[in-house]
Amino acid sequence: MFIQWLQSSKIAMWLLTVIRVYVGYKWLTAGWGKLTGGFDASGFMQGAIAKSTGEQPAVQDWWAVFLKHAALPGVKWFNIIVPLGEFLVGLGLILGTFTAFAALMGLVMNSAFLFSGSISINGQLLLLEFLIILAAANGGKIGIDRWLMPYLQEKFTRRVKISSDPSTLQKQTV
Image 1 (cartoon, one colour):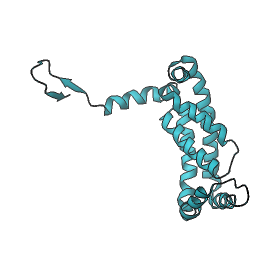
Image 2 (spheres, one colour; image 1 turned 120 degrees about the vertical axis):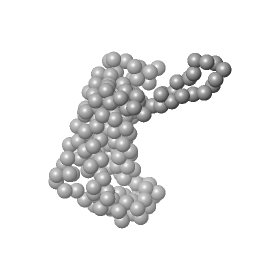
Image 3 (cartoon, helix red, strand yellow; image 1 turned 180 degrees about the vertical axis):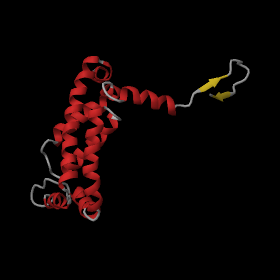
C-alpha cells in the first residue's frame, strides 16, 4: 500500500521531488568539492582497513580484504570514479534525469562508505535513496524524466503488429 502510494500519488511526487533535490544537492556538493579541491581516497581506504581489527571492529573482514587487495591497488581509478560518480548522481537527482538509476548508484556508494565505517550522513541518504528507488517513475515526474523516459521507452520498445487474418499467425515488425 505504501509503495503504491509512493508510485502513484501526486503528494508523493512532490514530496519525492523535495527529497530528490535535497539528496542530489548533498551528492553534487560532495562531488564538486572533490573534483575541484583534489581528492585522494587512499587515506580513507587505509583508515577503513585499520578499523577492521581489534575486539569490536567497525569494518568487516571481507570488506577490508576487498579494500586492501582490490581498491587500494586501484586507488587512482577510485580517485576519479568517486568524485565524478558523486557529482553525476547529484546532477541526475537534481535534474530528475535517470532518477531511479542515479538513486541506485548513490545507494551503492553510501553502502560502500557505510561498509568502510563512515557513518556521517550516509545512513540518512541511503534511506532516502531507497524511497526514491521504490517510487520508480514517480520520483522523476517533476524533472527531465517526465519527457525522457517515455521517449526512450518508445524508441527502444519493439512494436509488433499482428496480422488481422487469424489464419496467419505471422508477426510483422512495424
